[in-house]
Length: 141
Image: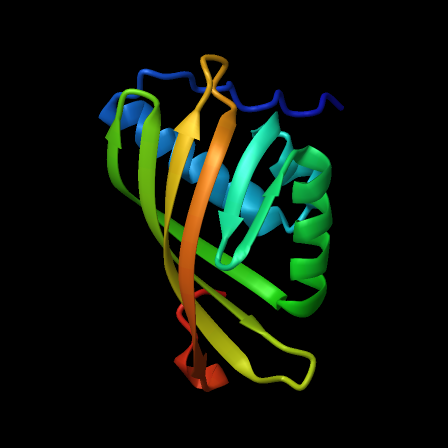
């Protein structure tokens, strides 16, 4: 049985079609909850701002994501293209998760992405807010 081929790397400058495809590929990777899979989309020296945390590089990205998904259980994400130009894409997102006590949250936020010439993300700037929700209010399963 042959393994599926990896998705093509979409490179800038982006069109509406390739920007939407880039956002969908990111959504799919993040929903895998696999830090290694997600980290491959970022340049070796990618710069991140995630809420109040600032860090750089794939190793730091993998470490951050492993910690994130050890706390944010049953994580499920939706990303939506907001705007794009040249080598930049902006998205809005929502994701849902619960903590170790079973409290559900919906996180709302925005990300601004900048890509290198090879289509790897060299900068990610993220802002988000968490809202407590009841399990029955979930949108993403």
